[in-house]
Every structure is written in structure tokens, then in C-alpha cells.
Length: 144
Image 1 (cartoon, one colour):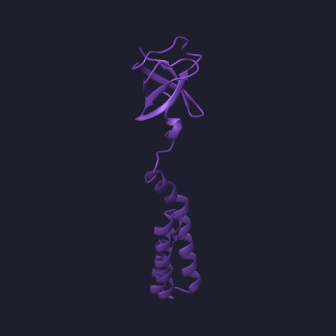
Image 2: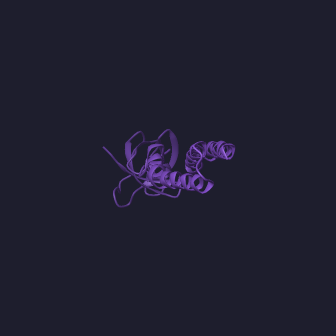
Image 3: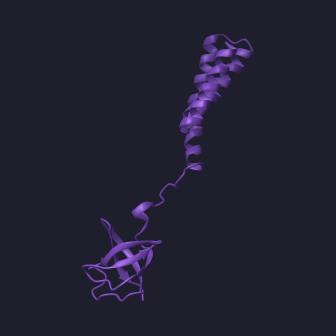
């Protein structure tokens, strides 16, 4: 049975590299536990129990910690358009309640005044702040 646990660990490790979910990696570690049990001559049922116990312990105890540690985007981080409110921008032309453009994080965005925060048109080359995003339009208010 040693060969079986070694093969299972290798296949699970390969699947972990393909999926990066931390499930198959923990199954590989559990399989190594089964391999160790087989190496000392434990009965097959004990090998299976050791494999299952190590795998389940890893899934419920280690996996959540690993996901937090290796998260691609920190938990709670705002990304995409959710990260734009509060960002500074520069007006490219006059911005009114109905139209305008701003340079926002290196990109040109359609913009208009946020009716709750600004009423007067904003001149070109003015520093503004994004209050929210409405579709593909940034609603802005002046910083100066």
C-alpha cells in the first residue's frame, strides 16, 4: 500500500498546482500520513483513518489561515470601480451637471458634477474628487 499512498500524494499535489485551492495540497499531506502509517505496518483501515484525519484537520484548521495569508486581494480591499470613490482626478475641460471629462488614475472618464455636492461648473485643470460612479460616468466635486 505504500506505493498507493505515494501515487495518491503525487496526483493530489499535481492537482493542487493546477487548481491552487489548497484542497488537493492538504489531501497530498494526508496521503503522506497514510504512507507513513503503511510504512510502519498499520492495517489499511488505520491508514485510511490517518489520511482522512490529517486531510480534514488541514481543511478546517490550516486552509483558512493559508487563504488569508496568500489571498490575491486583501479581504475587504476595494477593487475596480469600487476603488474609485474618494480618488482625486483632474478635469480635462469644463465639467457641468450634464457633461465633462476627467483624468482619473491615468484614464479619461466621462464626468459630471455630483448634484448633492457641487452646483457651479468646474474649470479645466481643476483638482476634483470622485464621490461615486454612475455607470461609466464619474460624479465629482471640487477639491479647491
